[in-house]
Image 1 (cartoon, rainbow, N blue to C red):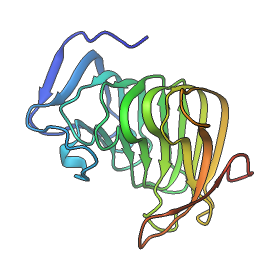
Image 2: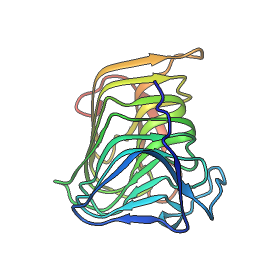
Image 3: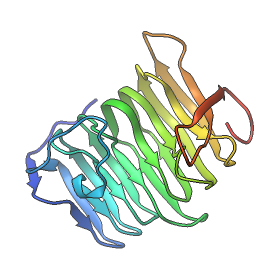
Image 4: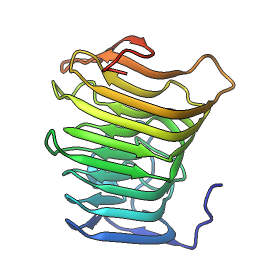
Length: 219
């Protein structure tokens, strides 16, 4: 069930959650007062609603329609707990920075109306997604296909996706990504949905899709 907002808070700039801090949104809707969505226009963290420093936590929040980049974890080891995106713009959550041992977690929550990806993983390390709901989205998770040779890992469990346009997860074969998926539920009125697809990462252009389906340890 999509949560009911307890009120609306508008920020005139991205709200920074400091390293190690826990921000409890108490199920309010958070958005920007000075930013409107411009579709798939790349804009960076300055148009996000929240920017999380290393080890920060955002919980119990709804991200409203007036924003472009949603939530940014530009360092590493962020915790996203029960966060809902009402209408995804460029993407919902961007995860950057970190090292091979970094782990960011997304627990509960959901996102809807994403033309492309919900979670964009540009940095190093692992992203763990559990108990997430997606509706009318392009894909749930994308390991960056243009960010250079970085092996990323993702685990996805207990998710329910309605009408994904493209795939649940997309990873890069040539950069040795690893995706582990369990208990994935998909409801789609369209063609066969790719649960885990893989591409040829390309730091100098658009990545090309190579295939999909189980292919350990890639998928």
